[in-house]
Image 1 (tube, helix red, strand yellow):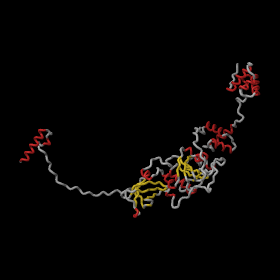
Image 2 (cartoon, rainbow, N blue to C red):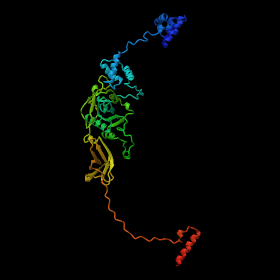
Image 3 (cartoon, rainbow, N blue to C red):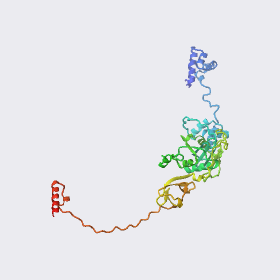
Image 4 (tube, one colour):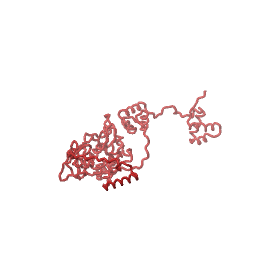
Length: 434
């Protein structure tokens, strides 16, 4: 019974050339040159072919385990750690953390293991990067802002971390909230300004939280202002430029920080009890992964830092507000958010009826009514007072007028014809002759 030997494409090419040598049509050196190998290697293969035939051309390592094969126990321990302590870590960061405990495995090998076990999903390749941009040179020149949901505190819950990352230093500061809301973004920016000053520009995504997705109102068009969200109005008052990114994944270090910091307690993030300006729990993160040198070498507080202090006379509680314009009714009441407010003063600066005023709601829940930039005195009422109905005088009774019934030969009772018209004229003549 003949043995079937499986040869690769390269080994089949060797077999064809060695058959020509065996038939005496070419030399071993000529066959080696055609196979792009040295003459010494060709003679060694020719010797194995004469001794074993086609079987001698098969690679000796075929069917044997690789010398670089990892220990099965190492694979089991690595996958067990990825299921428990390193849950949610990417293959690259997980490989670095495994190396810290003595389990050295390449990130590509670990990626294949995680995909087979269902612990990692293969991601589609991204498109080509449009253009590389160097980091900003000064702290506060550009700050990236976004919200990320994750089990940050390893409690099983996935709160939203609204964070701000300085583009020049990769310094991060943020707070936890249940959702990424306008109020949460205002509180985070408020806390940043109180600690570090007003940044020059914010880099955000296209959420309607940051960028209004509506057309400008007629008043905004007349004033030459673009359509602004409540957060955008606050930034406009502070002179902060909002730069919306073309795609969320393009927010460099903000997304990088979110991916590389799945556990602040393990990654060096300082979760403090500081509540900020009536905000959520604060998170200060200077380095997500100290052993990785991806941060920009810039120092906070250098002479060229750009954040400016809050101008004198400007109160941040009057900047981070929700405000709209409302019309004063004829009884000096204003309706807003399904609630009614009665304006009571001051008497010298009362707005006119049908005039527009500004209604503000601060983050602490208090409300302010403004007329030409000045506060108005007001109080809330349960409902708008209804207008008292005046008692109307009854209509005078008049005597009924007699009903006139035309006679049978009246023209109104006959159709309009030439004979009828002649009869009407004759009748009128008779009446006039009486």
